[in-house]
Figure (cartoon, rainbow, N blue to C red):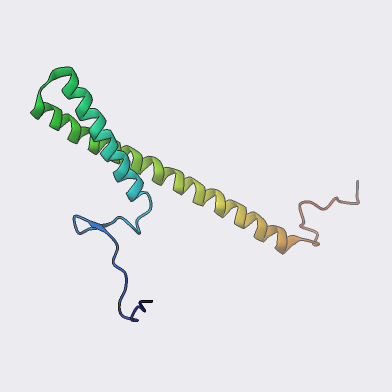
Length: 112
């Protein structure tokens, strides 16, 4: 078995030297969706018009739009999930903190 040296870290796949696809959330899925969108858009345009250069341009536009749309949709859902997790964590923390005290929201008051 190959042992890794302490200073030998695994390098992720970088796109254009700036975007680490392996460690950036949603990057891999967005690029795969963009590739599929570009092939479909370019092929459909080529079959409809038989113009090669314009079909390539439509394919590139399809790649950009599909990639950005998929990226923003995924990031929005991740942000929404983090907010929901934070609300749940705060609720659990408050439940533990106030359990058994007079400020416990689940405790019934005896003055009724």
